[in-house]
Every structure is written in structure tokens, then in C-alpha cells.
Length: 114
Image 1 (cartoon, rainbow, N blue to C red):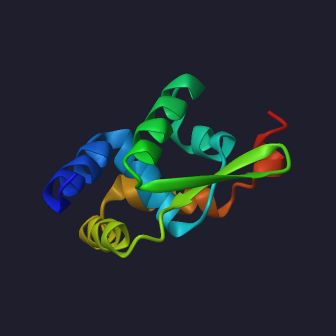
Image 2 (image 1 turned 120 degrees about the horizontal axis):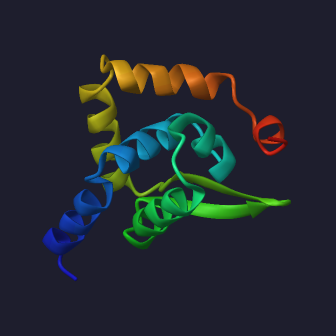
């Protein structure tokens, strides 16, 4: 795969409203599915499908932590540069600001008890 092909895959994997919201939240801090669900309010299967697509493109990584799988933005410098540029571009977006406010009050322990 060429660098151009790789860049296209990265961009395609976040070219969806919910995936973009998710990757920007994950850029703020690592999160589990139940935390993302609390903010997005969409089906867990949809969240999982979005996470799978972004993970396949290398945009995010996951690791098991007890009973949770924790997702975070990849440490790859190219991906970080793209995600940080998007975060900067959308810093004043009402929806993104609401998402950031929401994740400040959510913990996986609390949301998993729903």
C-alpha cells in the first residue's frame, strides 16, 4: 500500500459524522464503548462497526482492561496530525463542544451500570 493509499484509508475511515465525533472524543481521552454510547446515543452494534472500521484503518487502537476494551487514537504521527488538525478546525463546533463537555462527566464504571 502506498502512502497515498494509506492516507485515503485513514480519511475514509473517519469520513462519517459519528466516526468523526468518536475519534475527536478519543483524541481527548481513551474511552470504552459504553462511554461512547452515553454520548452518541446510537446502537451499540453501530458503534462497534464504526470502531472496527477505524481500527482496521489504523486510526485507533484498542486494549483490554479488565472487563472493558479501551479505545484510543493511534500514536502514529501522521494520524495524530490529521486528528489534531480536525480537532482544531472543529474546536468551536457546538456538537463537538457538547461532546467534550459530556465526556468530562462520564466514567466507564458509571455508564456500565446502566
